[in-house]
Length: 374
Ligand code: FE2
Image (cartoon, rainbow, N blue to C red):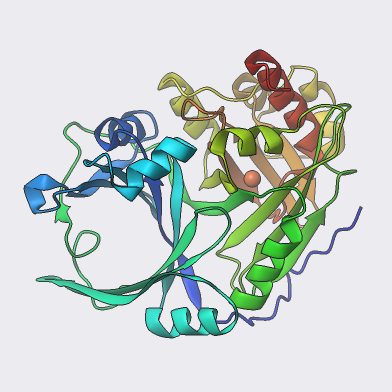
C-alpha cells in the first residue's frame, strides 16, 4: 500500500488559479426528460434554458442548480449533430467538467504550452448581462475541460441562455458542492492522465491506491487522486487491474466505449436526510449487507450520527487521521452501467473511503452478476 496525503501543507503550484467547478455538462438523448429527472428525483432547480424558442436551432440545454452545483443537460435536434454522435457512441454521459478560472485565455494558452490539446479556442460570448470568456482543453476519452471566466457576467448562466424556472415547486435535497469527479481510463493509462494533470494543470498527486487496496476475490482496480492547490478540484483516476473476473472499470469501458467520467461525488451536510429523500424519489443505491454495521464502529470509533439511522439508509462510514466521512453510491443513473453518483458527508476526513472499498466492490459485483458482465 502506498499512501501519501499532501492535504495539510500542499503548496499552491497550479498552472493557473481554479476557483471551483463551474458546471458539469451531460450529453443525453432527451434533455427535456433528463432535466425533469434531475429536478424531481435529485432536487435541482431549473435556472436557465436555451433551445429553438431562444434562437438555438440545433441544440437544447437545461441548466440546473442546487447549492453551488450547476448541471447542464444538453441534447441536439439534428441527427447529424456531433452531440448525438456522442450519445450514440457513449450513451448519456458527462461531456464537460468546466472549471471556473480568473483568466480563460491565459489559462488556455498556459495549458497548451504545457502539452494540453485544444478542444476549442478562446472566444467571448456577450449579451445584455455582460460577457463570458471561454476556451477548452481535452482530457481523457472525449471529455473536455471548459475554462470559464465569468467575472463580467450577471446573467442566469451564459450568454445565449434565458432565465427559466422549474414548472413546479422543487424540494432541494441538501446538495452543497461537487466534492470530486472520478474518471475511468483504459488499462495502462492511469499514470499518463495523472501526469497530464501534474504537468499541464500543476496538480499534485494526493493519494494512490493499488490493486491490494482495491480488490475482492474476483476483481481489482487501481486509482490515483490528483488535486489542485486549494483542494476545490479533486480528480481520482481509475484503471482496471488484473483479476479473476471482469472489473467494474472494464464493464464501464465496455459500455461507455472509451474513457470517461465514472462518478460525481456530491457533498451534503445531512446525508441521512439527503439519502432518505433520494430513496423516496425512486433513486436506487448499492446495497451493503447488514453485517457491515456489526463491526463498523469498532473500525471507525465514535461518530455523531445514530448508527441505526445509517444502517436504515445503508450509509457507509470510514475514518482517516483527520476525521471521518459518511458515503453512499447510487446505481448507474442511465440505461448503460456507466455514470453514477456518490453522496458524501465529511467530518474532517479528506480521504475517499478506503475502508469501504471491499464492501462496495462486492456490492458492485452483485450488480454486475445480474447484468451478466462479471
Ligand atoms: Fe468517490
